[in-house]
Length: 242
Image (cartoon, rainbow, N blue to C red; front, top):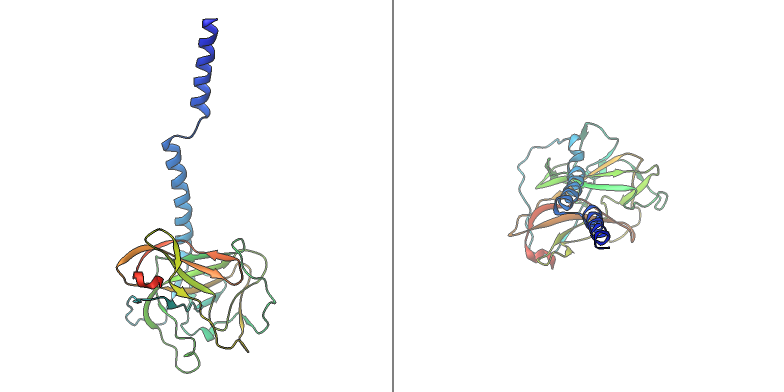
């Protein structure tokens, strides 16, 4: 009887050690896999070289309160090794006059990726496009790649903007907006941007200067569905949360 109890005890120990909770090395490996996935998303689009027609000096933007977002496209079209960009979004094609003709994006049909390996300038103001020759606003930015992953054509913007804002983590690690979405005073006559299957759109994300280091991301929200970008490190001022 004692011998049988001893055998049962050893079998219990064997099963517990073989099929119990994963050890620290296994947990660390799983975490690394997740981080590699984020890195792949962030750097995947770096293979598309952006051809910038301007070379004026660029500097980081500064803000002390919540600011107005302007995410205008600088390219929409086919995926190529080299993409010629424009800072006058009225020159960007892929437009229609009828809203609601195409499907609205969701996290399964569209990806947004901030590319920190390249830098660009910022596009002209929305109301400057038809008043001034094209120029590059001297605020340094990261290019943001948006890809249609589905077989449907997607509606991704209106007028000369895309419905995107920037968010940052506060001191408590909570995501909060540091920008307000751009809104037109009147929507009459505005065209709609569309993105065909497997096409790319490129916009810009300003780099801010500040004293608070945190995580940043972009949020695309056309309806109640939201599409989030990858997260990157950056600096802002705490007043930008207000």
